Image (tube, rainbow, N blue to C red; front, top):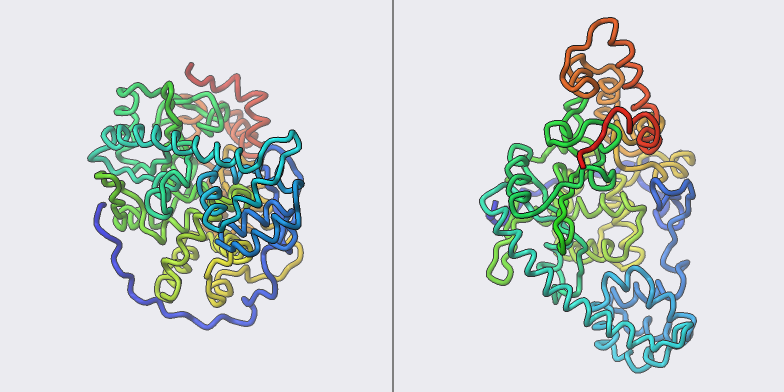
Amino acid sequence: MGRKIAILAQVPRDPVSAERRIPEQFAGRYRCRPLFGASFRTVVVARLADLPPHQRLIAALLRDDGAEAGRLIETSGDRLADGFCFDPATGALPALLYARLVESRLSESFSRLRTSDGSDALALIRNAAADASVKHARFNEFLGELLGITAGLRVLFLKGTVFARSLYDEPQQRLSQDFDLLVAQDEAAVVVERLTTAGFRVEWRDPGHCHQAGVGPSGSLENLSLRPSPLLAPCHNLTLRREGWPYVELKFDPLETGMRMRELDRLFADARAIEWDGCSLPAPDLLDHLLLSLTHLHKHGFLGWMWLYDIHLMAPRIAGDEALWGELARRSAVEGVEASAWAALDLARDRLSTPVPDWLLERLAPPSRNPLRRQLAYCVSTEFLWNSASLPMLALNAWLLGDGQRKRSALRQVICPSSSFLESYYAGGRHVSRWQRPFVLMLHWLVVLLPGGLVRRTFGRLFWKAPG
């Protein structure tokens, strides 16, 4: 697990056919639904030039363009202050943005800005940066204890915890709200047992922390692993909580698409160790971490400067090496996430001038120029969750977001499940007689057809009561 990433054999770059050449960028052309589960509103993903001034300032500081940042501060005035100081990006990256203001010698001009309530804009950012240092110190204490709890197990740390200590100049420049752990399925029970022994408790009742809550049996890892098709991921997510701690989120498939990752064993085999402060932090290799960051940004509707900047920091470590870029394209194709990879990389290049080669974007680009696809492709949830997404959403996902053949096969098994699955999922393992089977099958089809939120608010609460 701790060995360094092996140098990948060169992947030949196939010529891109004329049909696959994309005549347009993602930003400014495609629509997405940024608030999954909360709204049916769709918006066109804005290009850098179309963003409001405060977000253009954030982009300029992140790409270290002091001249453009200074121009925006001088020309936008106080109307910039509210947007910049209270943007979620500033709340996530305050230490980094404050450092960029100081390094670019813009702190004096920025200090003249006032928010709508008269507050000093620079003082707000400076105080937030100081708070970030305090939070980071506390987070380090938690991390040290968590490393001890998971020692010797096949557990990989994901995203922010790793990025802060391997990509950023100072770890406090990249705050995290929780710990994301990728757990090998065969050791999941041991991980949960160790965490509960250490004082953590599982959040069984909240669908945001246990997606099967209210739409299926919960209360154990065995129940969460029930699925009508082996092509589906065995368990989507599980969160544990301890008083005074950030959440610890257990992941069983890093891409979180709902489909079982084809190369999950390879990902664990290629894992590397991040050496930090005398500790060894097990994590996926650079390419796998970049790939899951691309899909994560898509999952969240391409919102989040922090996640976009993570991608921006990883790309230069690959820049100039066609073999590594080719391997990224191969892994994207194998896992069926080319649409996510193309859109996120193109957005990073537009907003942060991230060094992404043209040929890679052409290779990843959606093959169809169908205008209907352009309107729908990124308005569909990336999560192919049979008991949470509705049947129409699952069908659209299989049509629009890649890996269609495997998703259609899984969907057929979802619609026509085995008797053993029906007995385990709907009857607690008890035998279902021939006369009972039609009723159980009808219940199953309702779970598949309806959105998970509707199931939870109606008959789901009667059939599946989560533990307290």
